[in-house]
Image 1 (cartoon, rainbow, N blue to C red):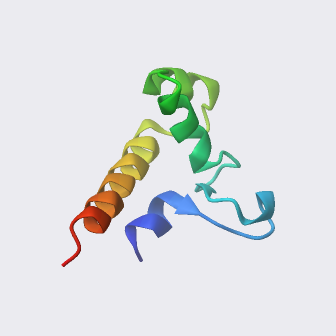
Image 2: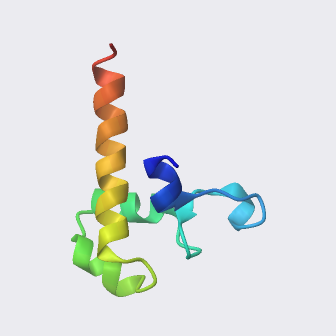
Length: 74
């Protein structure tokens, strides 16, 4: 099982396949939108209590790993 499979899920029957946090209908993009707007992680978590802090941090770590791999290909 990949790191993505433990944090983010995409199913055509849930929001048309939009990647969401596992066990929720909260799109990963919503977290990124909050952070892009300058909102703190705690505000996102307050507004979406179905997303656990650990999930949000793991998703951000995954995004960081993916961007780092893209910026520094082997």
